[in-house]
Image 1 (spheres, helix red, strand yellow):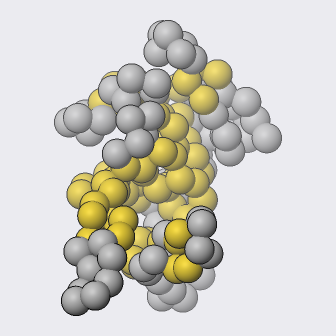
Image 2: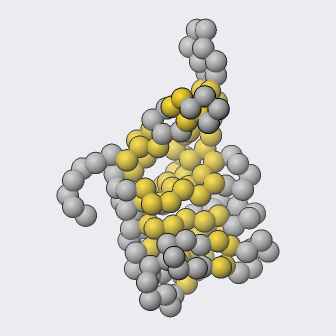
Image 3: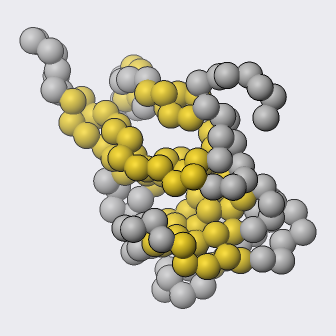
Length: 143
């Protein structure tokens, strides 16, 4: 780490109007990946600050005369031992795969964040991945 104390915000916007909806401080390091849950209720972010953070979409009430809008709320965090390069949910949202700078991929149960398994053998860090639709195997390409 460079020793620079930078904040890396999430900035959700309205795609129709092009208006910035909010800005939420998300990580203290560069955000490398965002993975949407397959039920569209939230997402996970992976960062150089060695954290995976879990977010949910919430309805934010508008002030007098303003419309309600969609916002995001941080619900939990998972600290890793290395920089997080990529995150990926299984199609049933039960597993989360996390690729790390040490060339491993760690898999966790999303409900408890309990560790499930580690995938070894990559010579370079995994920068992109996907989990098969049957949730029995992972496709982990190197990009």
